[in-house]
Image: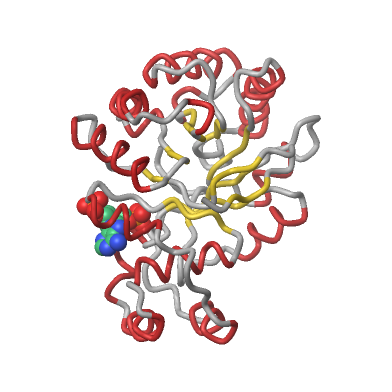
Length: 278
Ligand code: A2P
């Protein structure tokens, strides 16, 4: 598996197995095992997905030593703040059955439309994450769904985020956020690289994918990688799990990259970090 680099010198496998909307059941245990047996070494979950116990069972049963896997989770919005984040981290570790995480993210920024002291809240959460990182309990720390104005305060702290996981797929490039991340050495990760399936019926993408003998899903995942945005496709279907990692045997040409970049925003989730009601 190809890797990408984090600013602290760690590497991260270049495609992650996403588990958003995967149930807390045998389906997800089997999904994680199938993913690892296809070659995935990077698994992305979150406390709010409610599936950490099943993800953990999949990890325990997958037959690959823990140190060869890269496991990410995220602190949920209800657990923002210093003490709450420390407690949420312990719960996540215990649910996953692990004794460290490779990456821990703040799931969504606290923002001005809900909190007068939103910046202080984000800094308190970040302080807890920084201490866990320094204690070696987490190998890398970062954020998710942060725009440049949310990142600003964290960029003035001693340990700046190493990752920002954002919605990124054809039709939704978030250029200001990506530029800010690049300027600060923050790796961008792409959630919903298939637009939660909405991309798959787009005729322009279908035409380009046909040219490479690949599926639209593979085209979208490869497009993320060529943008250095680490894709986290989600599937609980074994054939699709395999399909979504078979993206290292072709390269999208510059002109096709441009055609995909120019697609209108036809399928964003509409989840605006400054407006979400959670
Ligand atoms: P399923 O999990 O039932 O296989 P995203 O990663 O953008 O959120 O998209 C996830 C959605 O896309 C899920 O509904 C998943 O369904 C579906 N999906 C994942 N991979 C593929 C694929 N290769 N082809 C078609 N649908 C896919």
